Amino acid sequence: MSIHWEFLATLERAPKVDSRVMAPALGQCRAEFLRRGWVTFSDYLSHIMVPFLDSDQEVEVEIDDDAGVFRYRSPQQRGRIVEKPLADITLHAFQVEVWLNELVTLIGIEPRKLSTRRARVAGHLWHLGDMRIIGTHDFAPVFVGRQLGQASVSDITVALCDPHWERGGIVLRHHLDTAVLQREHVARWIGDFIQADESGLDVFDAKAFDRVLRGFMTPSGMPEPEQSLHKNLLKLPHFESARELSPERAKIIKVMWGIDGKVPPGMSWVEVNRQANTGYQSFDDAFGDDRKNIVEKISRGKYRVIRNP
Image (tube, rainbow, N blue to C red; front, side, top):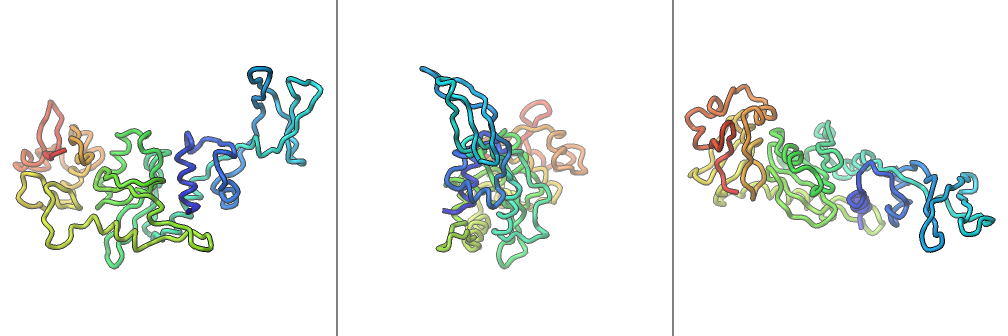
């Protein structure tokens, strides 16, 4: 199994990425994580719980770095000193950025396309950069997701619906996942693309990755979907065919599109333009007479895209 998958799975199990964890939480890969710098020594526990009669009692420990052990006085036999290895009380800290650096190198994202702002939702979603679709001038964003179900839905929506993303990308996950996310992004198991070879080194399957990226493009001759938003092309259920929007109008729709499979969110112009940052003053200003065919008013000051869940 890939060491990169092992680390992502370990992050998934941790309460938080800034949690300090004990050796058992790192599993059999602890030594390799330490060697690569993905986790580092943080501290030792100063107190531990030990058996005492029918319950447990907290005792203070004495650290002996030179001997690599810690000691404590048995609460049941006060004259007895118990000695155990320091590894049993060592706390480790995750170095997620170090791991992400190695992951980016393994995947092969071009230096000029590396993310300048990785953390999009703290502790849950990172943007690695944009990957070139082989043989084209098109690029798609690549993300890493952790405990997405525990993250704020609105934060994830804002991050994945950012108008900066011209097309759908891939969110790498620790488990098998074919979910379609906001803005046509898809989640994929990291093991679909990264596996250990016979020598134990992780290798990246660029062709498999490229095939998934190309899945976002409708093959020539295929019928248009009922509704979609790809780059500046908008197709709504009541449109006979997709319409080309200006880049500024497309930004507005990308912000308002929401999650496929769910009713699009109702948003005010202030909320939308705060993200889209257009030069328009209102929805009517942006879309003119066509506004009622694209964006409907659902309540005072709130509008949404006219599409199906």
